[in-house]
Length: 269
Image (cartoon, rainbow, N blue to C red; front, top):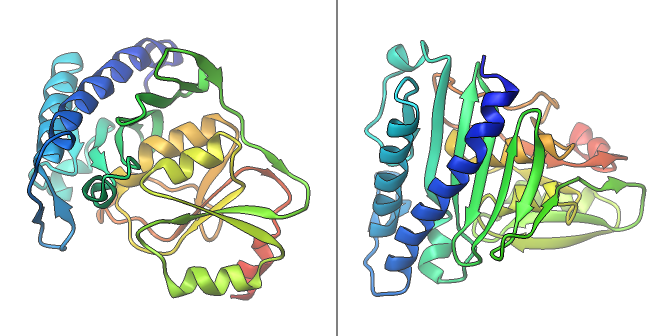
């Protein structure tokens, strides 16, 4: 198990690595680029590859004893991965669809997984130059592009319109059905792992996700949310775990503190 002291020491280094990856992404973003598609039809650009190269090289130099699993890595078989106690889990560019649309709602995600749990997480927003970061025992924070740091704390819902985060690029019939069963609510739409970060920052109350995601999509933001006092769970309210045989997540919920008016809708759905 990685100590809280070690995690606190690693966090600023990983933030710097994320900033460097963001620089590589913006070099592509500010010019002309082509879009390829992977086997699952998800888009891929030179920016994904550039950020992957920066992050993997830096993490392997920083902690050569810990493997790195990135969305853009060659697949690592579960027979090998299941022996990993501690490893880095990376999405070099989360929200490639938002990158292609040039709306700025994409992120760099770096998480440290220890015994199936995210214990350090950095979510960097390249276009804004800001960071959401957390380490177990050190809390969660937001760092602006000018270096201003503020602690993150989820909001406590006590009634009134529920602020619900919805995916900008992945709407689903299940989400529509859930929203119909909720009391008064207001929709906040945004891309990538920023949806979870909005809950961590107290700017939203609830984010349900029915559609497919992978472990690298959620790990870093889950750490930020948990250290800010929130939860990221499956629909049975059990925290998401990592390094499963399948790297796909089950449907999940991200939420803050206080009342849960959405819970009855889930149980009856």
